[in-house]
Structure formats: C-alpha cells, structure tokens
Length: 485
Image 1: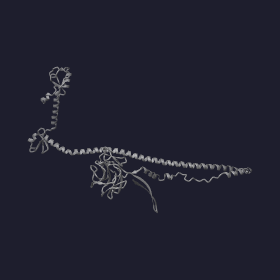
Image 2: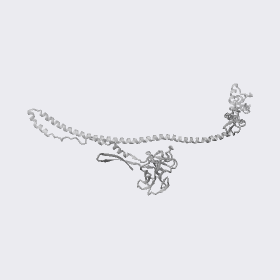
Image 3: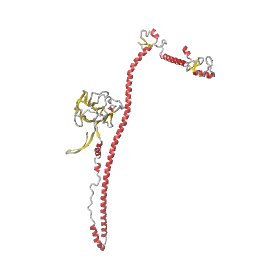
Image 4: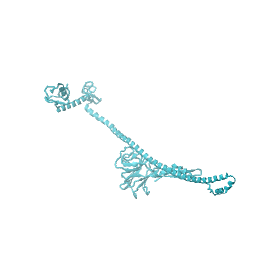
C-alpha cells in the first residue's frame, strides 16, 4: 500500500510519481505530458480534478515538487535495491541481517535468538561483517594488484621493445644497403678502370699491328708488280725477249729487297696482367677504403642519454634521453656503454681517443653483472674528472693517478690469461696505471662520459702482404693480412 508521501507525490492522472510536474492556479499538480494529453482530448483548459478553468495554456513548472519527486525516487530505488540484495531466511522469511562467525553462514534475527543450530555461536551484523571481510579481501587482492602493475609495466616495455625492434631493423637495413652501395661503387669504378686499361692496350696494339700490316702490304705490292712484269717477259719468245732483256734485268736488280719480316714481340694483349690475381689485386686496393675497429660499441647497452655514431665507434653525451627500451642489458645509472664483444682469453689492445673530453671513464666490465643501478663490483676503470685521474676497482674506491700530461689517446691493454689490465698514453707509450687480478668472467670494454666531447675507438688500417716460404720439396706462397694502428 502506498504511503501518504507517495500519494502526495503521485500524478492524479497516471497515478505514478510526477514527471516534470506543473502547477495550475488551483494549486493542483500534474505531469506535464499527462495534463497536455487531457487537455488535447477535452479541448478545454480545466483542471482534471476540480474542473476549474486554467488561465494559462502552459502552466508553470513546480520546481520544488520536482526536487521532492527526484529525491523520493532515489530513496525508493536504493531501498528497493537493498531489499532485493538482502536474501530472506528460508525458515523464517526474515532478512538475513547477521553472520554466524562459527559457521560463516548468514542468519536472521530469529535464528540468532531461537535456533538450536546456532544456539551458542557468535554473531555479527551483516554490515560490520561485510566491512571486515572486504578489508580481508582487499588484503588478498593487493599482491594480485601489485603483480598486475608489474606485468602491465613489463608489457609496456615489451610493446616499446617491439616497436624499437622495427626501428632497429629498418635503420640497420638502411646502413647495410649504404655500405654495400659504397662497395658496389668502388667495384664498379674499379671494373671500369680495368676495362678502360684493357681498351687502351687493345687500341694501341691494334694500331701498331695495322701499321705493320700496311707496311707489309706496300712491300708485297711492289714485289708483286716486279715479279709479275718479269714473269710476263719470260713468256715472250725469241728476239723480242732479247730486245727487252737488259731493261727487265735492270728493273729486277733495282727492286729493293726488304729485310725478312718478323712477328712483333709483345703484340698480343697482356691477358695475364689484366686477369692474373684479379680478385686479390682488387682486394688489395680495397684496403684503402677499409678500416678495422678492435671494439664495436653495443647500442643495446648504451644509457639513453648517449648517442652512438653510425659505425658504432664514437660515443657522445646527448642533451636529453632517447626513447629506447629499458632492456636488461642497458645501463641506466651511469652515462655508459659496453663493447659488443667480450674477452675471456688472450691478449687484446685498443686505443680510445679522448682528446679534450673533461669527464670520462675507460675500463673493463664483467659480463655477468646486473647493469641496473650503481655498478661497482666487476668494474675496473680509469677515470678523469675535475682535471684529475683516479683508478677505481671493486677493491679500491678511488686512488689518485699522476700523469705527466693529459693524453689525447689512451691505450687499453688486457692480458686476460695473465690477469693484467693496463692503461697508457698511446702517443708516448707512457704508463698510466695497471691492475692485476685473476679474472674468471668474460670482460667487456667499458666507456662512460658526462662531457659532450665525443670519445672514439681508434680504427686500425688493414695491410695485405704476400710472404713466400720455400723448402726443398715444395714451393708455398702464403698471403697474410695485417692490422695496425
């Protein structure tokens, strides 16, 4: 049964809570649409309740009543939802307002009071129990939420990595094509030069041969004419032959006899010069455009603030961070980069051009180290900062190093087997500092800089030499390639 408030807020026409209520001069209120429909049917403007005629075709909206109706509907909706959500006791048809803590079962007030099943049990009101259980559930949920945040972060990094892979592939393909384009250009130019040399030799020797043929043809013509005239006189009979004999003899005797013709030495194309060791000779010449870097910097390890050159031998500190994935190999604390190849045996040397850089580190880093955060263990280094040199290692937090002059090139020499790492001035060979340690892990070249002056791994020139080794039984020729700075 409807309450008095609900009846007061209901439209007399549709019997529902007023929607957009309007107020007539007689103080009766109706839904705006309901009143308009009644007036349309009756074709007059009287109140549907008291029949009093209205003076307005468009009655004023009753704003105060509208707010009351909206508030009533909200309350009724929440009460209805609460009533629907609260189940009823199957025994007593009462709402289940309590939780039995011993059985973890919802019960009604009668069950709490009269039921033998829950006679000595503990109870809590549903609202209080809901709060406690929600807090427990939230505690259970926290590890899942934390794990979701971690997974979401890793996924975001994976998405960035996937995009970066595409960028890397496109950039690397472009650089490969550019390098091969330069090689193709060199080979095309070398091919054209060698073909031009062949054509020039062909033209010279063909012209010489043509001159030789022309000279021989001239001599052949003169001799043929003399021989032909003489043979015709030999066919003349008797007195006529004798009459012309003296003149014919003089002509034959006066005909000059050329020297015996000889074949011209070296007239043929020097095929051996053009084709002999052709690939080797081209390769030997190619060394002028080829250099070798003993250390290649790995862009996947570079701090986001560092910029590497296209050939991955020069590192420069940039103005801002680059958008690159935070992959496990990447250093994210120091402005550092690591070489792409590590060493776990043998002796290795390379020169690092520092020039006027005022803040840098060169050294070696163990490959198995975690590269996130501050790196200390497994790092042997020579540091230049504030005009001073220091050596730092896992066992030394910083010892001053004295140098006669600031080197422009620092030579790093690693003898892994003997456990020695040394630094020297590459221009004067002056020793700077050495470490002695029994290395057990693979070591990678390490460079760090927080100055904007570029640091470069010095390239080495390639030399091709042929060495002959002979013994009594065999004759062997070996070709070796040498790399020198």
